[in-house]
Image (cartoon, rainbow over all chains, first blue to last red; front, side, top):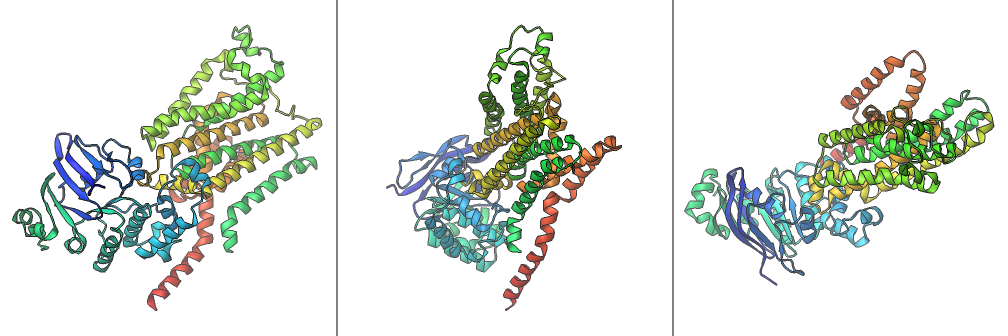
Length: 254
Length: 365
């Protein structure tokens, strides 16, 4: 089994002459928490869009090495197929199904059985329901199981969306600002949840909160104006002078 | 109380079914005087079926089709062609004769047999919707663009049906036909009317039960998911376009069935049923009844049509069009949930308030 679960190779994206990403290369190790950092407009979200096929790259490849399957080229695959292959994503704006209950949201997210026939005739098994309960317990949403998702507080919606990724038994979970709009204790708790689940999957995160990054990051890639500025563990990156000047210095967080 | 809330729509439907079942009996005992009223209520059952189909695609899946009249009329024409050939004994019709045709055209031949006709009633709307839906949804056309396309297609079909006058009798449509069970006019044919009426009622019950079943399963939740967050649904691993095509085909087939029932009660079919105005009227039924609830579509279809029947037979013929327009606007602006929405919000409001109070108590202690 390869050590890398995802290899991003020479990705460039051009929107009407503007290069959102230029020749980005990065490797993501299995069972790690990998952060993409960078100021606004650095191309972090675009990169996730490319991995999950929401945006097509102008150039380059994304290769994915599943545990029990041969390598796959994600660029050019349909988004739902990528999800079925085990790469899922949480969006920046919490996007849960507001008119369904927490449990229904989770049932729709279960791994496999995405066809029409199964949707009509198949009922979730006891194991699946148990796994839903287990995940909801982990993120602290068990008591809201019958609440309409739209009625949840913002932080809980974020957790629900994370839970929806977990229950899908993905190999790579991509989280776009999972801690946005959360308070310190909630953010910390999110970090602990991610640490727990990383033994089963790989997590790619975009986040601005430096305490959160320090809490859980295994590896950090800093993007700036669509290019990779540097890569390494969090302390090396934070100590770097260029990184400080383009990004961290401005916020004064370090 | 909780049970009533949960089963409310089914209880409501049961009441409607019982009332409908009483209609022929009431006519027999002359509580309903005109046979035309019975026929009209029969047509309303057909309208309820097409409304259920429309609700599945609009209320649940969020795809506003302004062209379901097309599928309704296709089902209607298929039925009418069979019935017409029953009248002529398989020979060519007057309008074909006038149109210069010497023998029965090929497209009419399948309608000599009842089983084939029934198959075509389902198949023609289904396959057309399948082809249209496949291309539209695969290319991710949505929102008002879909609505406009559905309108344009309906308009095109309308023009074709008028232009092909030797085959379809153009503007006049196919008239002078009896029901599948024979003539339903006059007191000596009351038995036939009864059979037809109860058959339609059974079909309505089956369609309602089927729709309830579908929406109760994961499939139904998924339709709502597509409505509320199409992207999220794709990124949960579902091939949304396939689901959309499926539900579009299903609702087209329901419209076809409804059209076929309609013809039996109406005794004729005209391109009028294929106009855009007619299609939009169907949308109004669903909106006023309450979209996103199967029972709402049924109630809306019955209520609006009954009102129209009562009012437009009096001096309010011209006012009615304005009235229905006004009702539609008010519903869309102020009561998004329609009649069902109003009832539900008022029944549920007290319960929800209690729940919120309890939660507060818990947080304080």
